[in-house]
Length: 231
Image 1 (cartoon, rainbow, N blue to C red):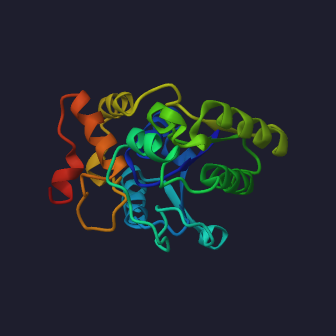
Image 2: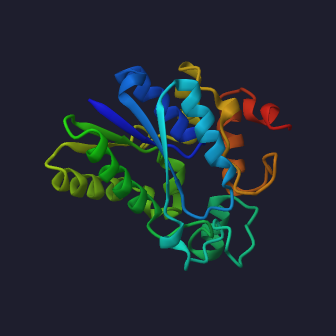
């Protein structure tokens, strides 16, 4: 069995890498990062650092052209300001989060399936994605929902002769649960980046910073990335 991990350089996907390496061995794991025009492109350099830490092959692809017409606040070309509030507050105010990128996970999972089928032609493959319960609270990100993952997993299996499937180990778990699992695996969270802002240090105010802070606090530990990135 081989695995391709969709790696954002963030907390959840890095924990997925740790799980896959533990299960399959580093020689059977590859990581993939996708540039889609995101304002926080710093995450790509963190994904490279994480891949180097685990000694796995790392690949990067560009999907920015596909999403260049979107005005999602998560994109560097957006005319919107990034909201400094929780996902729940944004959903209550706007019925959706401003950082939703149209079908982003569908696009990335499709790219990963095609890539996995190409580099692992003679092996079965798994695609790891770090979606979790906090991503779907209030239907914040519909392409993180369990029914979405189930549906696209079915499509990928059908389209790859049953050779490729999705693994989403954190469905039904909170980000605090992810941190607990990652801590037990000694995940190098000091190398990861989650903030949606463009700065050199995490802003501490955007939705993903707030979500991450709660997750570490729930485990009674300090976020090692804050020290690593100067806070």
